[in-house]
Length: 365
Image 1 (cartoon, helix red, strand yellow):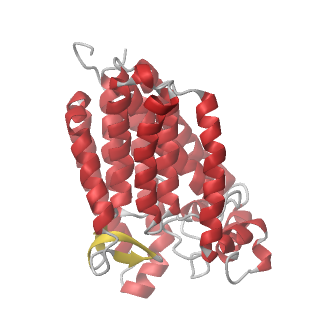
Image 2: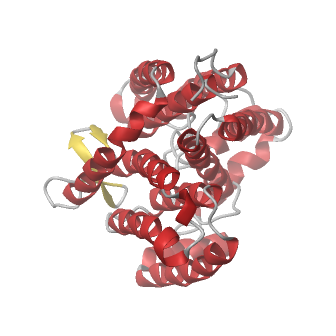
């Protein structure tokens, strides 16, 4: 560990601040019509987003100024608590069903998603585990299988909700972290093939997932069903052109595109701000990911390096899946766009995680 800490990575901090500001603007723009129609207050969603942004910003400042090494001793407990929450949320009468998934704990419209907490807890736990057992990671049975088994157990509980999107982000970030720790590509490649077979089984086991795949391959085969969201998303992106229709001028948010402030907010960004606005947003994410990778490389110890890689992996995988879905390159999975989409649990946890990443950057060599 370096003796002293410097200022946090200014590029990373600036990209986070800009993405958060753009997110607040776009949540209002995308949700005003829906908020007025359902709640009689066009500021309903953005006011709630501002509340969670403030809570998240406070958490970011706190985690940015503490020593990230302190988190190591809480890793096991954090993972255990998240496993307990994943079990509790499955209990009828306790877990709240939203969007067809029993993935929420809370009262009325306020709630938390245990799967969001699990993403960060898993990355924290794996960083601790692998930093202490890095010499065995090249061994399949003793090194690779134990951490992967824990990841798959968490994934299984998340899939019981079911929430394929959150599970995919957690697994993706975990694989990135495990690879960074030194796992052999041959081992990961073999497990990847097995995972594809398992994924095919999960798709075939649930008719709605199969419908999403068919809707992805040919949206026009069921334009009012499985292909509806993708078609409406493309109807938003196409008219945006180079410079967009103008901020607040989206047509698709008028009850054509479902929940435009959450999973498909990038469609509204592209419609209102055009190719230039969408590209600028992607550029900000690339800057954030680049500085995260740089922080992982320059971290003063293995735990910090793995933790930075895992947090960066969460952001990168989530951005890739969300934008891939919105532009029709991936099946619909129900993943929010980090820092941009409406969502309390996601926004607060991401800002907390990014505070940890900024903290690591303060000790970088």
